[in-house]
Length: 193
Image (tube, rainbow, N blue to C red; front, side):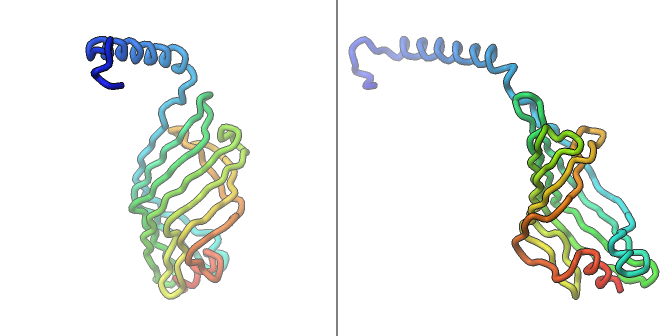
């Protein structure tokens, strides 16, 4: 609107805008407050776990272990009803050291990645999810690199103490990027044999 239009003034326009804005805000709070999604759940962890790598140990015929270290940030999103719909996990500094105590051989791979998980049924235990991993899964010197974009069918198996869903990968749906010519268990075994 042109400021020179008869009947228009800065003062009346501003007051009218304030009344309209305050009415809209009040209406949104009254009507939309109950329907708004709750704030995302966020959890930050420093990882430092040493575990037996069962698959690689079975392939090698001797114990193979993995030490996982680094920072992880988990963010869980909810819909308007409070059901979990999505999770975004970032691992900016995670590294894995795979080693075999009996051979004394090891390798370390820095594996920055993002995992995005889309849940069904509010992430109820036993429900399916689609998990998309983007980044480097593992680099095994002399063997190859597993990196890119991986899509997995997964199932919810529980929750951690903060309420973040725990999933188990059921099968790989697709992958794009550098891939190993063998299973991760075979590659890890080759890396420490």
